[in-house]
Image 1 (cartoon, rainbow, N blue to C red):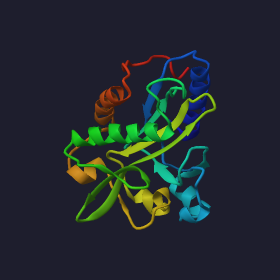
Image 2: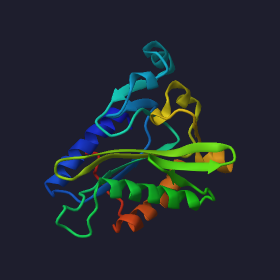
Image 3: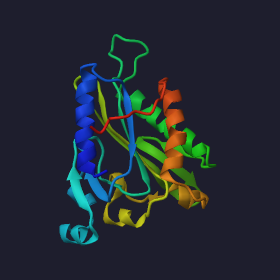
Image 4: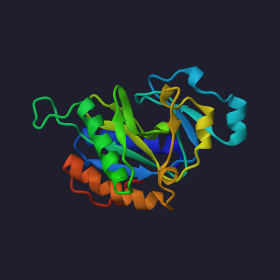
Length: 219
């Protein structure tokens, strides 16, 4: 699904969720190649010129999520949770930081099923592999929460995507670290569909939600 189309869908669903017209949802999809920048994005972190991006068939989209610049594209599992976070007076309380930590937990548990020992890094949102070869990021996270406490944007997990797209950016604005994928780490033949099914179960467990396939969401 093109990025701008998915963003518009998120906004429609978030508005409805804010009015309690729909349940919580989790959108799982892939995008055509696109760079997106968040509220902390810096021009210097986009390394390719507009002409070079056009020649390679990739666009740059400024968004209202948190974080810096990242890449989305085929072979990457992108998840957009549209959740109504509990209000401050409600229990159990879940603030934005707690929400981010839960997203990381979902990703770490999913990766563990494939023999990948992933972790978090102090002061950095996302999921990493850290070993003798250094730090390699497997999943990026960038979110926004509306005035009605509804979440937008989400996470991007590298499953079987090409990694050379990252040469055009300083991913997440962090220099001096690598980027990897599940296939690069394991050598296994993995698909986005397979991993998304596994991740859905962990998402339900971590957020205490009953997961059901939805029909008609795109209409």
